[in-house]
Amino acid sequence: MSAFLEYLGSYWDFLTQRGPNGELTFDVLGAFWVNIQLTFWSGLLALLIGVVVVAMRISPIASLRITATAYTNIFRDIPLTAVILMMWLVVWTQLGVTFGGKMITDFFILAVVGLGLYHGSFMAEALRSGVNTVPLGQAEAARAIGLTFMQSARMIVLPQAFRGAVAPIGNTLIALIKNTTVASVGGVSIETSSVMSGMIEFGPQFIFLVFLTFALGYVVIVIPVGMLSTHLSHKLAVKR
Amino acid sequence: MSENNVPDTGEVAVALYDVQKWFGDLHVLKDINLSVKRGEVMVVIGPSGSGKSTLCRAINRLEPIDSGRIELGGVPLPAEGKELALLRAEVGMVFQSFNLFAHKTILDNVTLGPIKVRKFAPSVAREEGLALLERVGIRNQADKLPAQLSGGQQQRAAIARALAMHPKLMLFDEPTSALDPEMINEVLDVMTDLAQSGMTMIVVTHEMGFARRVANRVVFMSDGEILEEAKPDEFFTNPVTDRAKEFLAKILQH
Ligand SMILES: Nc1ncnc2c1ncn2[C@@H]1O[C@H](COP(=O)(O)OP(=O)(O)OP(=O)(O)O)[C@@H](O)[C@H]1O
Ligand SMILES: [Mg+2]
Image (cartoon, rainbow over all chains, first blue to last red; front, side, top):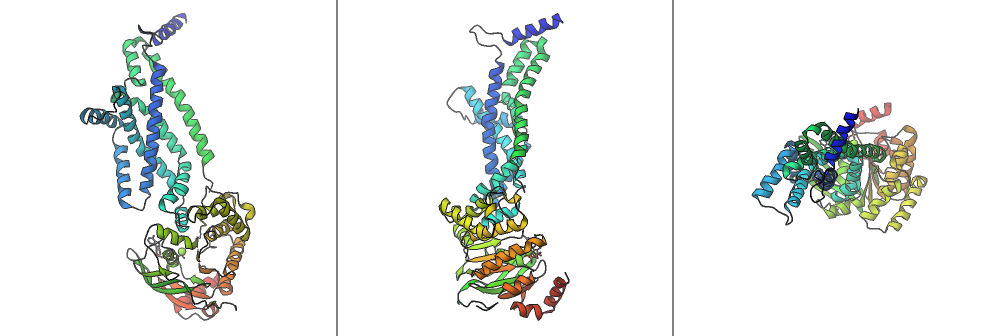
């Protein structure tokens, strides 16, 4: 028993060790904060893309519908790792797209764009399942009182689609939270999976505890999101 | 005005000239010529699939036609766009399945069009909306959601929503066929009042009592064609074509 406590104690020391300048060697909380920020910005981008794409998919203009369908299918079918690598190796290295700041800022922004583009296709599909809960007759009634397509989409179809798609949007968000760890292959070396790899490299005797630490961290983040999405999906459902 | 007599203002509310409509290989409107005078109530009757809904939908261009011409108050229907949206606002449409906006209150359903399309001030739209709900007898349901109302109440709300746009013409596509029998009359009563107030109406319905009492004219459609056009009493007692006789025999059995 005491040996186990000792082992835990030495893991704690390992976890909280500081470098010569007093900074944490393994900034676990800071790493989670990076993933939360990645989630926030790419989630926002994905939702925005999802709304635009689903509006295109229900629009009366065929070329918009085709473009939106193509986008959804392409990004849903490419592995996320490939999308992120492409942002790094093609967009940053080859095309030289930068944002004028530090390298890590570039990588962060490019990872957000990659994550946003990838999950945007899932958000679009989630919203489309929401659109399917809105009876076609309501869009017709909207047209019949003289609302334009944009007005009808904005005021009648999409608000109900959102409320009918809370659960799948929540699922996409949960997948996104965990998928932000893929940003490590895009050069965002300060996020959780990178820090985790570092810890395993320098403290292989703690490998199980290191895994446990990060797993618990994600569980703590994901559980409230799941609960909120279940709660909201019941509360917001449109009565028909 | 004696019953079933068209008030002859001479003005044509809506006119169709040689209208053709195809769905792929299916010829759903065959050479339709029709004109409805202002203040007239026309009942359209006919077997399932004869093109009655398509006719209504063509009149406010929810469905484009393949050839021919449709004029509202002497003005041809514009193509898609803002102009068309405005013109649609002049034609009220009431659907079989009500189609109220499920996430909005009854009052918001009624005021949305006036505020967003007609650009009425919200306070004006609200006052008018409440008056219309009073007129159709559901003023006390104004703040409820559609799902909380009975079918008859929802359909009356849908009529109020259409009237709120100050339409020049009202189209009803089987407004009572989705209703439980005990609710049919409350909707027909509202429509009768509306007809008596001088509204021009095209009503697809199999309610013969309503047609006899309220309509100035009955049009019988079959397979996309207008086969008969007559005063209601004339049509119901003396149908000319075999298909109309057959059809009437069928609906009279029920
Ligand atoms: N969007 C569409 N695409 C293809 N065919 C259609 C479409 N809408 C209607 N039809 C067909 O056109 C024909 C006429 O339909 P319509 O709905 O106008 O008939 P209706 O007289 O209103 O029938 P009901 O009494 O059943 O409502 C039917 O054969 C129908 O199947
Ligand atoms: Mg029909």
